[in-house]
Amino acid sequence: MQNKQFELINEQFSPLFRIMSVHDPKDPKRRKFENNICAFHIGNGFVLSVAHNLRTMAPLFKSIDNAIFMKEVYPRLNPAQVQMFDNCYPLDELTNKRHERFTNQNDVTIIREILKQINYDLRWITLMEKEIVKTQLLVQFSFPSFYMNENLTNYFNESNSFYEEIINKHTFLLDVELVEAFYADDMALYKIVNTPPEVIACIPFLEPDFSVFTDDKKDFYCLQSSTTNEIGRMVSKAQIEGYIDHFNMFNDPIGGNYRIEGFRYLIKGYFRFGSSGAPYVFYDRTSGKFKANGVQSEACPIQLSIENKREGNYQYVNAIASPLSIIEERVMNHIQSMAVV
Image (cartoon, rainbow, N blue to C red; front, side, top):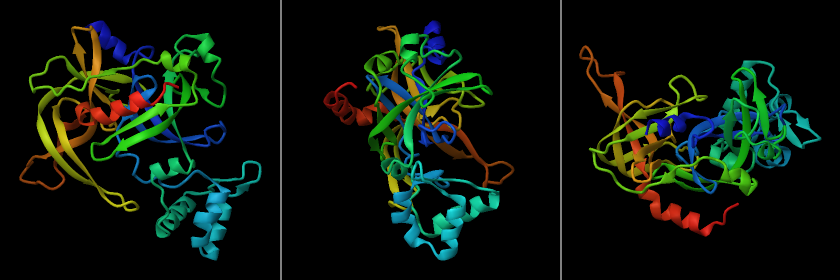
């Protein structure tokens, strides 16, 4: 099993990736990445992550199509605010887009306050739907070829791959589309699109297992980002400590607050902040491979009293995981109804 554990964190074999929202994805000089979330491939180009990031608000847009700006933003601005946006988002006639050009941090603050004042919908799900951002899967290697295959590497060019010297990684970008967000269950299903089947076929994946495990389950782990940043990976032991009939309210000032609720695992074990969307996996000794069984959803705050002071003493010693069993039917319906790209 140890070799299989090593494969989980190896860049050539790991099914763990990141999904990000990308402004100007085809323009390398202007491209910007935000809304970083863990995700994992479950086969045939289907990718699972969490849903709670989709209805959070972006700070502001990095660029915007001028037609959208003139229809949705401009009519809600006063003359001074129009001038401010013209200065900070000048129109590029070649792209017919307004790209950010901030000269000082104070301008950023002012623009953010204006967008908040006019109640402009900056939720990531809305920016995705309006194609203000593109959703992409990041696949990274220490070597310049895509899974050590030059033929597959030829599919990529400067618009969907680049080298980052500071981290010594070659990044390849794959377009993904949201298939369905299961907000109450805090899971989201994506599909890799605009990509040749042979490229998708070589991407490692975790077969989903929809069992509900008992609290004495052995060989149970969390596959997540490394302890200090999102570049590396780690696999660490996890223990199902109990079960939750979960209820939590998630803030969405634009679309209305919604409930995150239903059956969950209570997990004991190390989890990293920023690991939302990471898979909980178990080693299936019959097949000799790891399978996915749940998704890291939320931290579970348990308040402890320190020097008789409760306020501010939240100690996050547990995690809340969404078992794949709660979305089995819906996920399988999508997989069975959608043709492989």
